[in-house]
Length: 423
Image: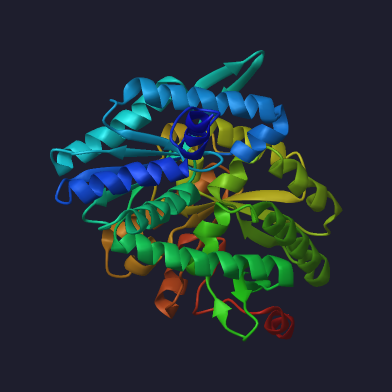
């Protein structure tokens, strides 16, 4: 009985690995007796485990945990310490690592081992295993277990934010990033819950007549203290957060309302993750069908070229709605070929700002802009030149036959009330 109680105190019943208490004891004991040995702590977290439990049931989740425990036991020597230290979190303490080069090999081995067992079958259920790993090195990243596990946890948190199957190693730069991440996460959460997201609108103009042709919606966060936060502060994190769906709903609703209010086309930039969301075209079409003017969806040339066939399928689906147009942003900066360009069903090519800025002094940049304009016309597309900041640029672009102009010479991004004054 005493032996059984002792086992329950230090071992995890489900996986037969050390529990948190047992793991701590083993690691602290080794560090105390080997204070100068290089060691490695890895925290391995199963991605989306709560979803697995909810979707397939706790029994399936338990079997997955047991399988992961068995895989780790079969691939690590007895000298290393293995534990299940949280609900879906495992820990590996590799003792007496010979060199820092071995650290990378150990981490790579963990990922390779788990990758070989990527598909789990529990009865008729197939589960795709994905993990995140946070790494800390003794004694560089901590002189005791508490410091070591805190820093490995920091690395794990950052890995989880980048998506499944990401490994991160702790260092001061990571620590600063995680502090920044927490602040940004709080900002995004408040923006969703308190309605702090706003669009600023940059007009673009018909090149020949100078009339307003439409507006590009550029997202900002206006916080409780009146500070304006620009996309470079939060957009990448928003794209990987669970608030993205709510943000997309807000953006579509906001864009639709402004189209109805101003009677002008509104263009909205679409990220890679949103473009790949299979439900997005349907949600966009739902708003566009009711709109009195066009919604223009902007995707970058690089996004298009990542998977031209898939991109073209999405564009064709969107363009079944007469109120949706598609613009290719940053055109000329990616790696498209003429064979793909002839397949693009876009309505507008946006000439990248880098070419517009350089074309007055650089003949090659000017030649590229002229070529894009001619090519677009031949393919039945319109062109929009970004970054028009000087009168000489405007005159040259009009002479080239560009359809639309956008830039600080003509108008800067502005809040809603300033748009209404302009109109």
